Amino acid sequence: MKKQLLAIAVTALAAGTVFAQANDTLAKIKASGSVTLGVRESSGLGYTLGNGKYVGFHTEMGERILKDIQKQLGLTALEVKYQPVTSQNRIPLVQNGTVDIECGSTTNNTARQKDAAFAFTTYVEEVRIATRANSGITGIKDLNGKTIVTTTGTTSVQTLRKNKRADGLTFKEVMGKDHADSFLMLETGRADAFIMDGSILAANISKSKTPNDYKVVGEVLSVEPIACMMRKDDPAFKKAVDDSIVRQIKDGSLTKLYDKWFMQPIPPNNVKVGLPLSAATKDAWAHPNDKPMEAYDAK
Image (cartoon, rainbow, N blue to C red):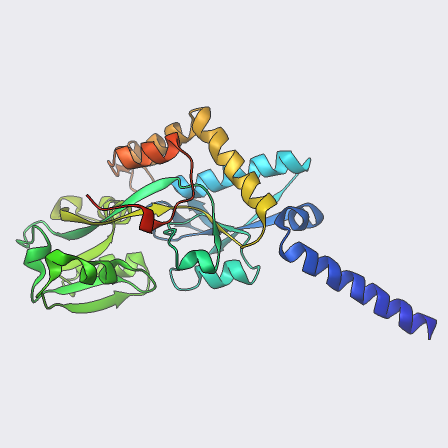
C-alpha cells in the first residue's frame, strides 16, 4: 500500500511539474537543457539549405534570442532542436508544446493573438504581387480573369478580396502547399500571379533559375507586422525574448543581420535579395511593440 501511495505521489509530482512547465517555458528549457525552435523551409525570413540546415534573417535572430536565454538561465550548454513548420501547422505546434518559439514569417493579428503570444515586431511586411516580367500585369486591376496562387494557411488572397481596388474582379484561386510550391506554380505557368509577403516573393525570385524573368508589381495590399510566436500566458518567457530583441536592436547587431540576409549575396545561389530595410521596420525597431496587424494601415 505504501509503495502504491509513493508511486501515486511520484506520478502526481511529475504531472504537476509538466503542468507547471506548460506555461513556464524557461523552467522547461532549464530542466531539459534543450529548446525547440520553429523554422520555415521556404520563407523570405528563413529557409533550408537541406540536410537539416536552416538559415535566414529570422532563423539566425531566433538562435541569438536562445543564446541570450541560455545566458540568462546560466546554462553551460543548450541544445537547439529545429522543427520545420508550415503556414497550416505552426500555431498548433506552438500550442501543443512541440515548438517553444517559432521564428518564421508569422503575421501578428488579433485572431492569432487568441491562440498564441507574439514577441516584439522584428519585420514589417508588405503583401505584394509577383508575376512574370512579360505578363502585362502591373497591379490589382490587371488580375481580372487571371489565376492567382497563394500558400495554404496564409491570408494573402483574403486580403486581396477585401481590397476596395479589387471590387468587381473575378479570378481563379489556387493554393500551394508551401511558398516554394506556390512559386513553382508561377514558374510553370499554372498561375499568372503569386500574392504573398514581399520578402517571400523577393527571396523566391532571387533563388529561381532566371530571376530577371519575374518582378514584384503593383500596390501594397496590406502592411503586416511579423514576429516570433510563443505559447500564451507565459510572461516570463515573452519578456526574455523581447529583452533579447531590444538588445539586438540597441547594439546594432539586428541591423547588421538584416544587411547580411537581404543586402548581401546569400546561399545557396550566392544571389542578393535586395530589399533595403523599410521605414516601417525601422520605426518598429525604434519603438519596440507587439501591436497586431489591425493597428497598421496600408498606405
